Image (cartoon, rainbow, N blue to C red):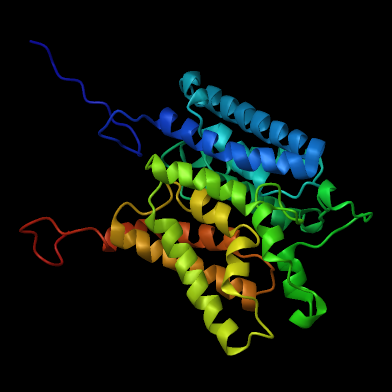
Length: 325
């Protein structure tokens, strides 16, 4: 008599023709416009950082798979490639390649493999790598250079959010024109300078239904409401909500990092709670925190609450008694 074989695998689970690798490479494809834009603005520095991040992430993944005696074919499921690309997009173009390698190793080792691999990680791996670099090498992670398209002869350069944070008033030219923020002719991390390129990729993901639209909608709307209240009250002291949406890592965070299937909630109500929390925290850190940017910390902070959110927002089964486990 033939026995049935049951295979236990980690999330994400799908009941259609999509596979993990297909979804991962769809996300890779959606990032191409932002990659092209960053290479256009930062040239060879951007190319070297992308190659180093992806290559190191793949190498680190291969080592852990070998040590854990796992199938090496999973190396090409696309998850390590996405981690490398997203990590590169959160790094300043001036960062040395040895620090890029360290961040990439930490992203895979601490952000993913230490939890058991894809599907078990609690935090977004790329943000774990960036957080490690931010805490261990703060000077290198806050040293910026202008894009080559500006033709500015200076060794260092301030980001739009940096200008906003450390200028005493908006009348001193702290605000970068919204047009420059949209197209990307500003300083900043590789993948966060061009809002237009990021939105093009985001629209592709939404069209393919790879990401949950509630997450970027919740993050952006809550940030607009939070920063908009202060802007309406004191427009001479606070930047407009549109500035906060286009500046920094809000768009890449809302569409490409907060939407990670493994580290985000699995039901609609939980998704709204998670997304609204991220948006409010970003606004809180930007307006009153010690850092100019708050996207990374906000997503990682809300990642920690995802298991709790999933538990307490789980829809009740028909006939289930309230309070029953």
